[in-house]
Image (cartoon, rainbow, N blue to C red; front, top):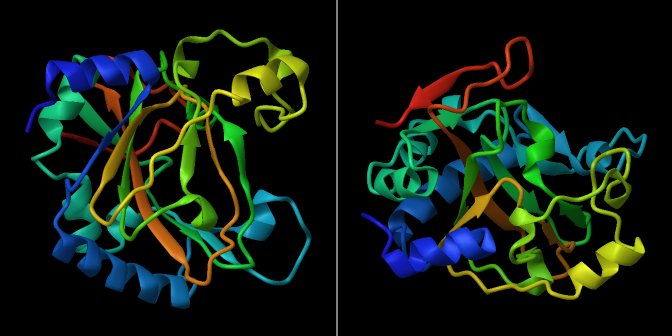
Length: 244
């Protein structure tokens, strides 16, 4: 499946693109069933909410299941899905390569126990020759503002920010004067089961905590352009899968 020129233009302009009804409901349900088992068992490796907000606690509220590519065949099958490869090739203008160092994850926001995801660019996670990376977000259930839907700042992937815009953890600072103006331009689009969002690693995004009564679970992975090599001896110099 390929993007239309209009869709490609929208991605290039805004730094993200929502594609409705991309994944079959059965696939989402099957992924979800497996994910819930791993979440219930807090099966390592995980990232906890306590780790994210840097709170010393003996409790572990799962924020993300990490390294999901090697957990279940159905997770792997989604990440190497052939239907999506032409779209990724269009965006990257190159062969996509699945990078498994990070954003090889199933994300969760648990009611009451989840925390806000601060405004950030995903480029903070990786070490590549350039920032030509794209993430694929799969909505396994309906997502809306009250349960932690992603919000984006259009065109932010094209802005060169000063270091003052970010804190020591590379979060975009909410109350910094110049940032506040930009955050006013944030947008969102409710997602339904099977929708995907493609977004550039420099596009600013965030999500509020889940204040609904049901856990929200999503799947995210990232691809790089084949020509965009990982830097040696960094966390990005890790297992990869070429999606040719």
